[in-house]
Image (cartoon, rainbow, N blue to C red; front, top):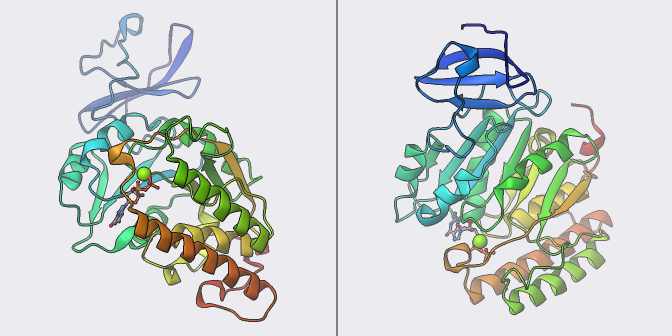
Length: 319
Ligand SMILES: Nc1nc2c(ncn2[C@@H]2O[C@H](COP(=O)(O)OP(=O)(O)O)[C@@H](O)[C@H]2O)c(=O)[nH]1
Ligand SMILES: [Mg+2]
């Protein structure tokens, strides 16, 4: 590695490294940028690629930017070829160490496209469902030594620009789980959420809050961040392979005493961003209510279902 310590536009260039044919420079303020292929070693003319040059941006930067924490973004994908690149382009790679996409036997070119974007891609040979997909995502993220894992849908519904905010909230150690809530900002319907989805979300959330005894703005967002400890201690492999997986994991986290933080997240609604039909939505709604009832029975020690059969004090145990 060639070390440079020169001053450029009031920033100190800490180092310059050639890696896989690309050149990166790290400034004293912590910003990592990819330099254009022709880099002048005269620092006065060192040209830094624009922040928008997203293609072939480096994954696995030299060190993590979230105070030494390894940040992984997992993308559970199913037929996401039309929206993947737009999603990827907005992922803040200056703080993300690894992006993992799990392709659930899509019938489109999701996996090929993901690989062409240099995303670590795992392909299911057969469709395992949304929950089954996330199981592969979290297993891969834990294996890659991630300290913070952010699950983002590759359907470009939730803005990836909040990844940094979510990662820093977890890094603050005030929270163990962070949710990007579409409800908090009060703009869900304005943002295009269908009215029937909004009403179902609010009613389900109200019932879940009453039964579980929490006070979340919603339990149904597809934008979530977890610490390694949460994913290591909750037995999520017992959960459903279907859409209710998320809801079970969140309820398990509350059951175990993990602290849940929420931030406002605007969400977009367009054809590719929302494909679940009414029958599956209703099935999901009943699954959420069943989870809440299982939670309550588990808390009252009346009946312990499989998903809640773990030590409820795990959040207090040391790492
Ligand atoms: N693994 C898997 N994921 C699916 C399947 N169907 C939908 N999804 C994903 O589940 C997520 C939520 O579905 P979506 O239609 O966007 O729901 P909505 O945004 O809540 O209306 C998206 O990321 C989809 O790609 C499936 O059969 N298998
Ligand atoms: Mg969606």
